[in-house]
Amino acid sequence: MTQATLNSTRTTAAKGLACKECGAEYELKATHICELCFGPLEVQYDYDYLRTKVTRESIKAGPHSIWRYKDLLPVPDEHIVDVGTGMTPLLKANRLARRLGLKNLYIKNDAVNMPTLSFKDRVVSVALSKAKEFGFSTISCASTGNLANSTAAIAAHAGLDCCVFIPADLEAGKVLGTVIYGPTVMAVQGNYDQVNRLCCEVANTYGWGFVNINLRPYYSEGSKTLGYEVAEQLGWQLPDHIVAPLASGSLFTKIHKGFQEFVKVGLVEDKPVRFSGAQAEGCSPIAQAYAEGRDFVTPVKPNTIAKSIAIGNPADGIYALELARKTNGNIESVTDEEIIEGMKLLAETEGIFTETAGGTTIAVLKKLVEAGKINPDETTVVYITGNGLKTQESVQGYVGEPFTIEAKLDSFERALERSQTLDRLDWQQVLV
Ligand SMILES: *Cc1c(COP(=O)(O)O)cnc(C)c1O
Ligand SMILES: [Zn+2]
Image (cartoon, rainbow, N blue to C red; front, side, top):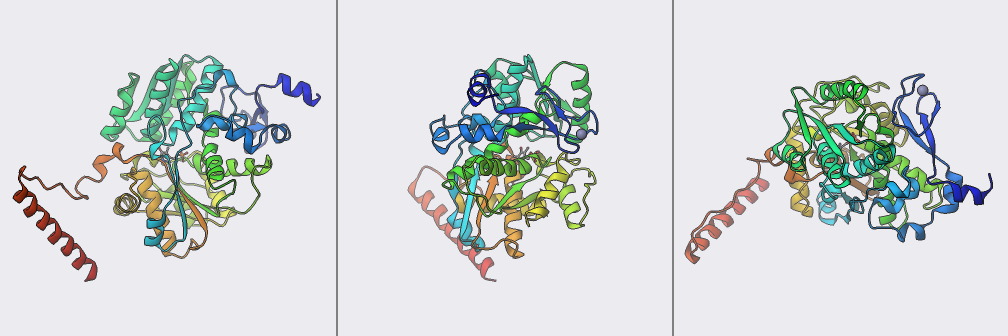
């Protein structure tokens, strides 16, 4: 085919799906597992074609959302659902950096991603665009909370029917933040891994589009935009080191795919980037495999306040493990107490209220710095993936309270004095 006919007939650069294990190729359809070896399927692109099509200028001319990278995503223009997802701030975190002893620290802040304040809006935007193209009328997912929020919200915007599955013990903010959009919500008595197993059965019986099951290859492509945006926001450069949370491990590996694609297409220069992953000790199957030098992940039963990343049997666990090792990164876990301290540290130094997953990531960052596993000069990007207003119960009792006063100046002055005494006491504790 000549270049001209290629350009005029092609609607996206996505060529097909390929098995990550055996390389078997499949058409772009609603399927996620290799029929030959049960390996996961991933979208393949024509990078020669993309090199002729995508430039820094063409990206900058696009919308202020993940769809500025539409050429690198598997959705034709006419099916794109753009709810303003993506292009979240990349902040230079000077006060947190100084506290930790780092010099070049950045926060990628998906706590303010649109429309539902977590990174999941990226993956769902791509999955539902593809679901519309495939003609699904009912959309579903197995969720640890944030995915249900995103799926319900974006399905509402796209006019699709929605039925989502969550573990019954989720935080109130995550449940309300799903129910408000009017989907059918199934609160399953069990943990996420049990919810997921049920959903696999439902997916086989009902003709629904499950964003993280039969639409998973498209869903996971959405996470690449977390790599693209950071590279663009750093002035078309890759960082030296990234730290990100691990649930299934998908987000982590797709940030890497995003960086690699920018190199392949000629948008940034290649350089080594270290990949470090964060888990909660109460659900740390990947961190345990890493610590023990294993190349397989043993499933665990989750028990942690970091519910949004509590996946005991992570689908992309071995790929995350491989990536951390190959890039000279690390995988670390932290306790629930450290997670709460991490949430408070980020709030007090940078003015960002993150949820438990973000607390996990900040606590792991701190642990890695203290262990000398992050060089102070490295340009380090920490991914904050969710918003603290959704997991309020996790910090209840661990933060200060307001002074209740009368509407009188002397009442205010007495309270102010009390607050200053409390501050002094705090300092004395620090000095002891
Ligand atoms: C889902 C989720 C993650 C991790 O997702 P994976 O791609 O499954 O590893 C991280 N942070 C938050 C807040 C999430 O909701
Ligand atoms: Zn295969």
